[in-house]
Length: 593
Image 1 (cartoon, helix red, strand yellow):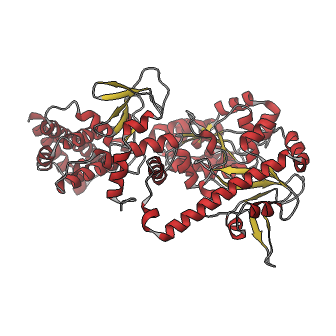
Image 2 (cartoon, one colour):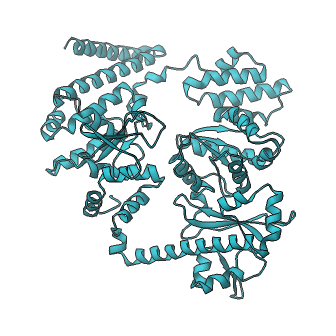
Image 3 (cartoon, one colour):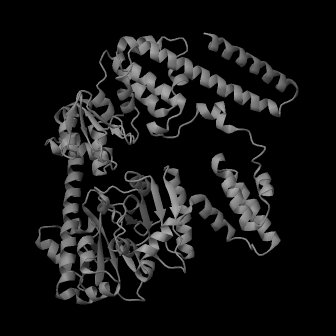
């Protein structure tokens, strides 16, 4: 189901011409049928970033970023799909459909706006208190922790005075209601019905979302043995701790290669103050899938630098799996002597921390090391049991990295590499890299530069289908063509189906609208449109690709049958032998033609 009404989206796109939107971020120069500039998504000196006004799309020939105007705003402003659409609506003074048609949604939006404003005003109040007479002790505390005035200003750090109603009185004077303060997490209603400030006599850390709005607060005690050490805003209509990250707002507009994930506010502030300005913190909760998705908007590589104690290691292990599930390359920075990043950088400096980063362990190595802590590696029995557990884990890894970790376990235990490899049963495994079934069901997300030969053929067929309905119809009638057999890449298949729906309605595909309706991160349609420009005969090119796909699938199936014959006997081997012969015959016939 579409997130926004089609007619409304058409109007939005017509008012947000991609050339004018991109020009607000990138200096463009016309050349040929396109506008060109230096890519805003990667560093370059020679322009490889292009904008096609006629197709309402952009594409970088260097990093392969591409899409329509919604995708461009998503990437530039680090927004999700609905937020990017709302951004474009504000740009042209259009009301969102919910603002027009749904009274309840309008009320909810109005409340959220009030809560945003309340949090902003509260942050300003807290900061003013810190810098005034009430904040002397808090300033002394921050100075002892190594947080200077520049960091205080940059992070908007504040102080909640000791009084029970200081913030409440200030906010009521500004026109806010008590129920709004409670909804924003700024005030609490006691059992007696009295409403009082949520934070008192604590240092305040405003939590600023990716959209640069204050949404919540962390409040730290200045008394060494007081518990809890931190009081944090609970979930509110504008804040979910499971979907936000501390200091994520400071990454906006930066070109970074990776993110360093730490546990606490102080850790993040210390790293930023030391010049390591790609650090974020996980807001007092174990890393969540929503936070991983937020991270993925910015980078594809994350270094986890949690505290060195056992609790930190357990949190690291959970976070690794969540990040890896999102396709993020994960490494672990090991901090010695059970120190946290704040203490380590304070004692040894940023350069020493970056050296730890350079020697960070992979997800697999961290897990193998963590696993070893459950065994006594000083005994033969302990080493053997650890090796057995480690081999069970290694056997589940990608084949290309298995032997690397076999060698690691062999060195760690003193057991021969040959025995470890045998325990993992690597030598007896079929070559699944060419398995027909695996190839047919490959759903891994890939950038255009990483596409297999088969997927490149799929992309070319998609480009041909865009050349007109007559070409599309001829392709569909090809004897070896079916959507399910030809397209195994979900992104390409989704693009093809969207194009097919347009033709079936008797419409010419609106490229800008199709791109805008694709909330996913990967845009397979963009490189297809680029390739289309070099195709002279759409049907002939598509037919050739269909034939190549058929041959690739036959070869993969042939390999799969051959692998099956190795361990088969009797009737099963005879059946597989007949199937093998039939496949060989079909391949020969296709090669002749």
